[in-house]
Length: 183
Image (cartoon, rainbow, N blue to C red):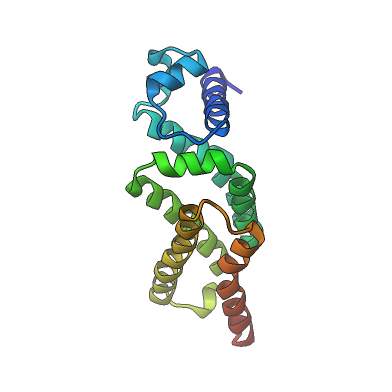
């Protein structure tokens, strides 16, 4: 690992530690820098767009990276499980990130996650759907998946992860069965 990646990784771990201790109302750059024992220049050299950039990098590096590896081989259900397990295992961290992120950034992250799942799901059914059908499918179901995730977060992650996974995958599993019958 080269030095910039080590520093980013350290800051990501420091953020996980800071956010895992307790529910916070906010986390300022100043408070984070003090806790992580790094200087402002180092922080902004790695994350020019500030703390939101660190949040985004952490989620991309820790969550989506692993999930994408399963999506790329067509294992969309396993990818869903990776993300849901991460959120459930790091509930305080994820709830803090959810509260700290602005709605636009949060929806962008959820949209990437949902589109990754749906792209993986549709890999097996490329020949059966036109591009227009595919786009409509992704648009509709990505909003449905985002709604499930937002509901889970708004309820404080109270729903057991197994039930959320069932909700996320239920329609896709049935649609997959229908598409398989029509092949």
